[in-house]
Length: 454
Length: 175
Image (cartoon, rainbow over all chains, first blue to last red; front, side, top):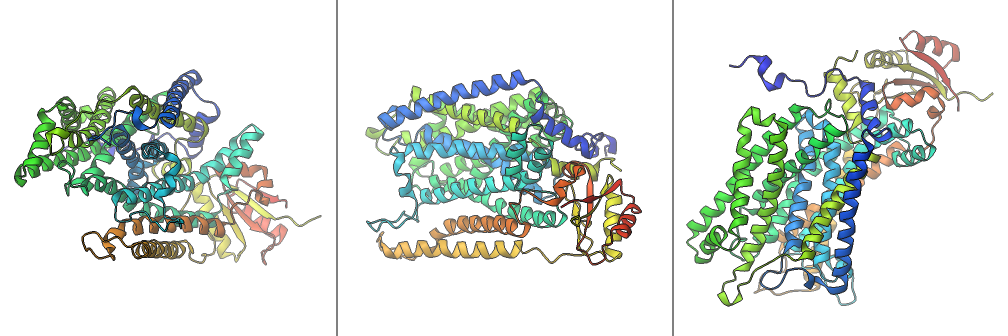
């Protein structure tokens, strides 16, 4: 048995010297007197440049159609679907942290839930762009929705692709609503602390006149708990449905019952990797190390190890099923993934998603910031490649060799992808500059319960 | 002179505040308001409040929205029948995902609107904002306000009562 002092559980979750008032000073201070404004400006400008690229790519797409992308039969689902699944998966960590860990009373989530919920919203915004653009004629997006049209037509409600429309739009709406409800008390704090009258009016309008009334708090807590309870099955349903988009198709490499749970595990895995990628620079630049401590990073590394194991099990199950099924085409798809023209992607994916998380068995690795940051980046890459492998390698070898093809992403594919990364970053930079990046009201409660405030 | 909105005491310590709220309830004050920078369970109100209507509203909103979603899909399946290899039109298992999604959406929206309704939001102005101390209600101060329409309210006695509870300061809240 290890002595208690060495066990990680004895470590405080937040800096024990924090006070209830100090929380507000530190968190609101990031907005009203931002440290290192040049660094922020450089990052925001870089994001905006990439957004310009995205706008150019979208404009050219609207002029010329999706022929400017590398997609063609047999690979009709190219980067658009790869990136859609990648982005939506990243969003899932935010909901996992804000809803599931809240219901499980994991108080360490309080330091990161606001920021990761914002990450969810922006990731879903980036994800949502892709299917719309992939429609080819985005003006007709409303054909996906049920409405009384003159031809008496309806969407095909038995198709997972239509389920996806409802799942993603519900997910985006409920995430936004949950985030806004969580923000209400903090917007009131910002209103009370803003020096300029315009900022005061802006935050005041958004806070809807929140004044911290005890009765309001009671209703608010009820609403927040139930929203968390609703968001929990929602987040599982969304990526399950994304998994069903593939699994329902009778295509070797896609037609697999493991897909929904394996997609959910992968989504949380990639999302936590993205949270680490963003939070490590954030806490350093904005002086939030007292809130987001080494303990938080360590716990997130443990989540990476756990969800990484789910993903590894998913891979293993796919290989095993392909072999055990005895189906010629299933076996071919698996062999082709490992040995075919996209073998580099496959092996890089396995290295990043299966080998890299094994580092986190070691406590020293979980507590080393450079290792964590490097591993998080590799996992982001690995999870992107996973979606690439699933989408592209299953499609590019059809049943008949005469219908085989290759998918080579074009300049516009890359510009759109990098552009959404820019959009994501620009939105995050705006968020940390305009809204409190840590849930102050919840943090005050945590400091009061755990700290030494009288 | 207009009667003030009430008398408001400010507390720095959550424990002193919780004690004061309990005392106010014991002393028979019924029209009290509390203001807290974070949710402090069990000390929000001197008198227990009616249970929140939010859970019920969310359940009703969710169920209605789910029924609507399922009904819409069933209607569409029969309004434009598609014969796929003789499979039944009432293919209810494939209607479950959208029914679930819209149940969640309906419940969440209904919960938010009910919260706005019970809290009276948006309400940008309120007499307590007239108190210059109140700016710290969203930071690190706890406030107990006894309204002037409380049957027990008597300017001097209530002021004395609040001062003896360990408040940092007690002041009238103008209307």
